[in-house]
Each structure stands twice: as C-alpha cells, then as structure tokens.
Length: 292
Ligand code: CCH
Image (cartoon, rainbow, N blue to C red; front, side, top):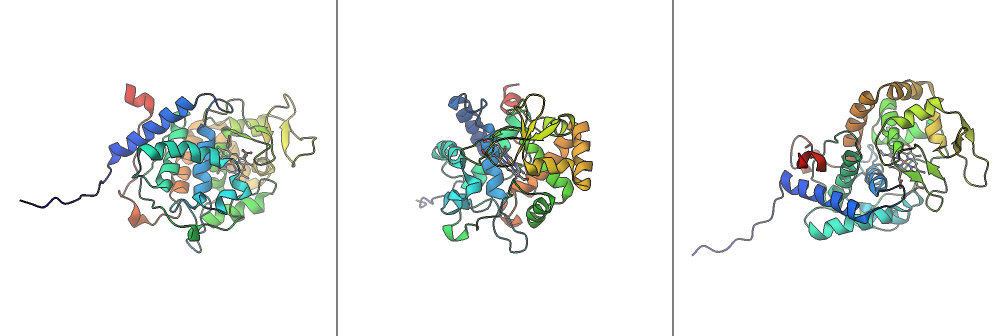
C-alpha cells in the first residue's frame, strides 16, 4: 500500500478570490465606521506596508509585513493602523495559509475596487518575515513638508513625478484624525468612493490656512469642512506636479489608468520577482461582478 504523503496546499487564483470576498464580507459586517466604511483605512494599511521600500538597499516594502512588529507598529506614521490590522486578523483566521503581506495588500486592492475604483492588478507571493527586517522610522512621507521631501521619499521607492501625483489621488478616500496624525478632516465630500474629486477640489476650491492650534493644514474657504495637507497643496504649486494634477482633474479615466498602474507597482515593492506565483498579476472580481 502506498504511503500517505502530506501534500502542501497550493492556493490558486480562486482561493485568493475567496479571501477577497471574505474581506468584502467582514468590511460589510463591521457596518458604519468613520465615514461609513473601513475601506479607506485598509488602503492606508496596504500603502504603509509597501511605502517603506528603499530601492538602493532593497529593504522595506510589502514582502515581510514587518508592521506586525514593534517598533514599526508604533511608528507615528502608522498610528491607527492597528484598527485595519485587527480587521484583517478576522480574514487570516479563516485563511491561515495567506501571508500577511499578501493579505494586507489584497485588502487595499479589495477596498479600492469595492469603493468604485479601477481594477488593481495583484498577485500573491509575499512571505512573512522577522522583526529584524522591520524598517527604521522616517521612511514614509511627512505631511508638513514640501515638494523636495515628497520627491526624496518617492524617488527612493523608485517612483517619478507623474506617479507621485497619481498615487496622491488616493486621498479622495478617508480622512485625517486628530488622535492619529494630528490633522483633521476629509479631502472630499465622498470619502468612501474613488473619484478624481481630490484633484478637482485642489484646483476648484480656495484653500486657506486653518486657524487652530493643530498642525499646519489647509481648509476650503467655502464650507470649511474639507482639508488639504501641505504635501497635497504642493501638487498645485510645483510646476511639474501641477501639470499631472491638472490632467487628472480634467480626466478621471486617465487618473484611474495611471492610479491603477502605480498602486499595483506600489503594492509589489520589495518582493523579489521569483517569489510571485504567476508571471502576470491577476484581476480579481468585484462582489458585484460575481453576482451578475
Ligand atoms: Fe495618505 N495620509 N499620505 N496616502 N492616506 C493620511 C490618510 C490616508 C500622507 C499623509 C496622510 C498617500 C500619500 C500620503 C491614504 C492613502 C495614501 C493621513 C491621515 C495623513 C497625515 C492619517 C489619519 O490621521 O488617520 C502623505 C504626507 C502622503 C504623501 O504623499 C498614498 C500614496 C496613499 C495610497 C496610495 C488613505 C486612504 C488615507 C485615509 C485613511 C483613513 O483612515 O481614512
């Protein structure tokens, strides 16, 4: 009689689609949070897990999910992301075979797609690393700074000016929380829907410095309810950034196309190509598409 050989479970695309669907379900079950959804904070988790990449040393990025460890979990830039990590823990319980890096980036993909955004090509292959691989503080952008800072942070990840502007459009989603970053307010009137309103508002509204004891930020003069960070506003002030920001304000399809490409690249930073299970990223289906 042949001996029983323990075979390792090799998940296929349909298994990752199941994880995607579980994220959708947990976010729905969680109900009204913040402006109505956990989606934005899941996008921020995926971005902060990836944006620590340094192309010179090949360190950081989404591969090892080092935000699980202190001190990275406690870096000021990651304040509040424990909320997103906790939601993802519920998914991990049902699909223990998925790595945290894959799970968190898939959470970002799922959130963007389900909030009416473009498809984000994604593929699995990230592995769980160790605390020794955690990145030093200061790799993520500081919102109080200007164009030089934005360039030095994003060029370090390997992005150019066009990609910096395209990625910044993610601020169509979510809001700032005084107990997390110190800043306050949402960027748009529809913070749980992916639109190019961030770019439109940057140009269409009059932005004035907020009079308060908090960190320097702008508010829209008309309603006083929207906000821009100094790093957002600089996209209208720097000549090179402005050209792209204007183009995205005028053409949502163009921004969707460029945003999709840049986010897909962002979420793969730091992952050696040979680790990916497929040579091309996949397009996972939205909940709505599966109901058709
Ligand atoms: Fe961001 N972001 N972000 N951001 N961000 C904040 C919130 C979100 C900067 C600073 C802040 C990107 C780029 C930048 C999201 C996605 C992206 C907050 C408020 C600050 C501050 C945190 C709080 O108080 O809760 C700076 C500086 C940059 C420089 O470029 C990029 C790139 C992305 C994604 C591609 C999302 C989404 C949020 C909302 C989170 C929430 O909880 O609502």
